[in-house]
Length: 176
Image 1 (tube, rainbow, N blue to C red):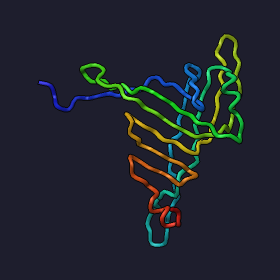
Image 2 (spheres, rainbow, N blue to C red):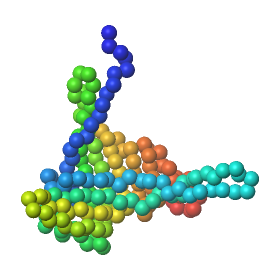
Image 3 (cartoon, helix red, strand yellow):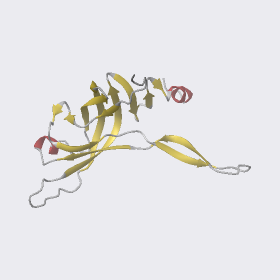
Image 4 (cartoon, helix red, strand yellow):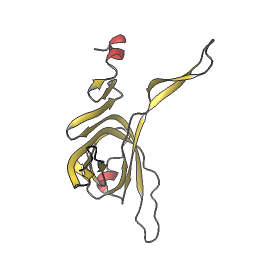
C-alpha cells in the first residue's frame, strides 16, 4: 500500500523572455526576476531589554538579464527614459513516483527601465556576455493562472495571494 503523503517535486528548468511583446527565445542565458524585499528598521526604546526589527516599506526592486550576445532588439531598449514590458514564461513540471504528473504555466510580468548594461566581455572562443540591470516599478507573478504577487511602487499596491497588503495604509493617508 502506498503512503497517502507522496512527495512531489516541482521544477522549472527553462523559460522564454519577451520584451515589449517580442519573443527573444534563446537569446538570454539567465534572468533574475525582481521580488519585493522588506526594508527593515531597528526599534529600541527605554525599558526594552532588546532591539526589535520592523518593516518600514519595500526596498527598490532590480532585475537582471544576461544576454548571450549583442542583439539589435536589445540594444534599442537601453534608453534610461523609457519603460519596457518584460514577460517571462516558463513551464513548471511536477514529479511524483508516478513520473511527471503535472505541467503548469508560470508567468512573470515586469515594467522596468534600463539601469546598467554592464561590461561587454569578449574572450577568445567564448560566448560574449551582455549583462543588463533593470529598475523595476511593477511586477506580478502567476502560477497556473492564479496571481500570487502584485507589487507596484508608484501605485502603492502590494497584493499577496489576492490580499491587498496596503489597503488600510492607502485609506489612512487619503488615497482612494
